Length: 103
Image (tube, rainbow, N blue to C red; front, side, top):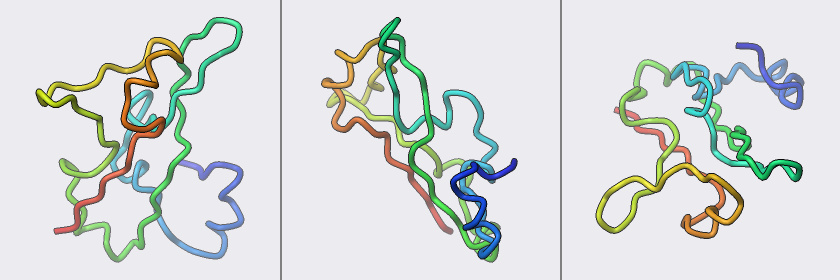
């Protein structure tokens, strides 16, 4: 996909690939942060965190073990996606980490 506007100059100088583009993440799969509309308090999934990869490493990336890390509770069940700003306080962080496994 086309790079975000803020990264166009970066991509002109370098040839790195956005990990999420490589993994073909779409919709809420790419959400590393949830913004909440002041009008509705509904979550708006956003990608605020990026991981750029050298094209030479692409063939070494594990597609099944790389991407957005979904927080888990102590019983190993997933934290649900937030329904409102009050839910973020239940998460370990307000951002979901990006995980990369190189084999």
